[in-house]
Structure formats: structure tokens, C-alpha cells
Length: 400
Image (cartoon, rainbow, N blue to C red; front, side, top):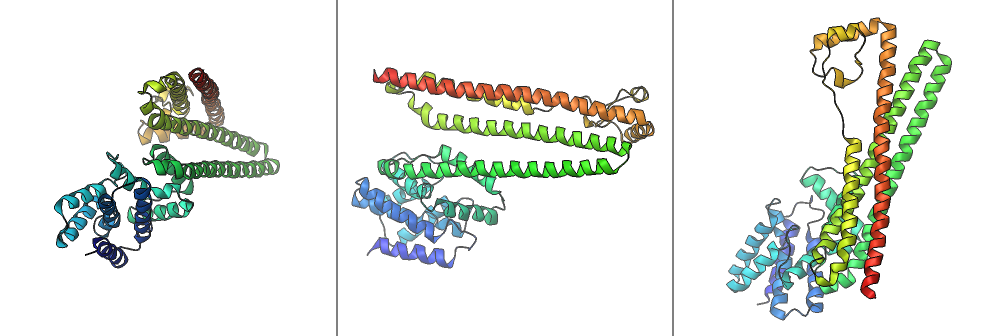
């Protein structure tokens, strides 16, 4: 009895006939690819025939659980494999080993032996595939249809960068042959993210220019009072745009430093226990601490400040409250706020003074944001340079 051939036919027929078409990634094509890569890795890693057969059987069964249970498909796949192999009088001991290999394909599971490393690398081979971007798009569509989670291209790229930073190949063959292709895919994703952000920034700038042009035309056509109102709108829009740009820059720094810390935690720090890597401790510490400092400063630059949210009638009568800022009225009853707004609108001088104050305080907030942002970029630059120099000195001392 050729158990491999029987299992292959069973898995192919089940995935063809029973698996929903919404599974554009976890389907027969993926299963066949995993089995093919298991064959390559088993040969290169000198796996014995029995263990190779166990790996191939696990490969054919590892995603069959998607037919019935998307939330816990590894466990469901193990049950399907166990029932099928028992029906064909397969040894109980080997069935248990195959079940453990299937459970090892969970994306959060860390392999504990060579066989688990083989199936883990085979299951995630697509990260190093030349066809990665088509396969990855299929996964995005599957998540959209199955889990009802929709991601823009930029969001999806950023999610994948985080996943790449946490992933590693385990077998020697995968590290030597697949890792370089994986790194090329990472570089392309980072390039795509940069291009998308630049296009978005360019579009925002074009929209802002059009808005400013339209406002200037209105200013020429309308009365002096209309011109004053236009001036307020344009200035407020400029303040808002500058605030958004500052927040965007802060978010970029947050993302970049988060990636640096993630890579350091997953790649460098686990290796520092080894005496041979002790020279990397100081450079790694400098790099991580500078990234942490950048994250703290970036958070401080975007941290909102809200006032008490209340005012008194006396303050309105004395024209001391800026009713255009939500932080001064969000706790007030609707009736009080309506009365205060009518009082302000009936007094033209009070109205204009309030608008001027609103612009002034927005300017103060922008000044704080950009000072912190400038400091953040300075810390980031110095931290990167210091880290590079520290690594160079460390490696130089080791080689001497």
C-alpha cells in the first residue's frame, strides 16, 4: 500500500471539491508548493526515509482543516489526518508524530526539532518566492473575504514588513538559498511603501495648492470683509496641513524605529548570550536606546492636550473664552454653549478676536510639535551614526 499516493489523492480531491473558492491562498496550490519544498529540504538536510515520509504526509494534510474550521485549522487538520491514517492501519506512533508536525505549522509556533524546522520553512517558503507579491495579494484577498478585514496597499505592505521582521528560516539550506531572495522582497516592499507615501504627500500638496489658488481668486473678487474671512480660512488650513505633516513625520519615525527595535530584539539580542558576540552588546544597546528615545520624543510631539472643557457666563461677557476650540466647551450643557455662541456672533469684534486667538494658540501647538520633531530627527541621526561607529569599532576590535 502506497500511503503517500493515497494521501495525496485524498488531499487533492478534498481541496478541489470541498474547499471554498474564497481561499485564494490556503488552497491546493499552496499545499502542493509546501510538499515540493519539503522534498527539497528533506533531501538537503539528510532526513531519513521514514521521517521524510512523515513530513510529506503532514504536508498533504496540514491545511485540510480549512474545509471545516478556519479558526483552528491546524487542530482540525490533525484530526483529519489521524482519522484517515487510522483507517489505513498506519502505525499509531507515526500518526502522533505527523499530528505534531501539522500543529508546528501554526504561524506563532517555534520549532523544537529538525523535522519541525523543515515543515516550518516549507510552509513559509513564499516569503522567499520570486512570485511573492502575487501570492501575498492572494492572501490579502482571502483575509478580506474570510475575515472581513480590508487593508489598503500601504497598510498591507506595512503589516508584511512587521511579519518579515519577526520571521526567520531555520534549516541551513533555507538560510543559504532562500534568505537572500527574502531580503530582496523586503527591500521591494520598503521601496513600495516609500513611493506610496511620496505619492500621497504630492497629492496632498497639489490639493493644498488648488485650495489656496481658489481662495486667492475669491479674495480678489469679494469685499474686504470677505477677504478677511478668506484669510482666516487659508491660515487655518495651513496650520492644519502643517500639523498633519508633523504628525506624519512623527508616525514615520515611530514606524522606522519600531522596525529597528523589532529586528534587534528578534535577530541581535538572542545572540548576545554567546561569549563570541559580547562585542556586540554596546553597539546594540546604543542602537536600541536611540530608537527608544526617538519613539518617546515622537509620541510626545503628537500627544494631545485638552483643557477643562467648561466656562462661565462671566468669562463670556468679559470675552475671555475661545469658543472655537472644543477643549473649552466639551463639558458644557448644550443650552449654555448655544447662548455663548450667539453672544459671540452678535459681537463682531469678539468673533474676530476669538478667531485670531484660535490661530495664535494653534501656532503655539505647532511650534511645540516641530521643536520636538526636530529634536527627534537629531536624536535619530546621532543614534544611527553612533550605532554604525560602535559596530565598526566592535568588529575592528574583534578582528585585531
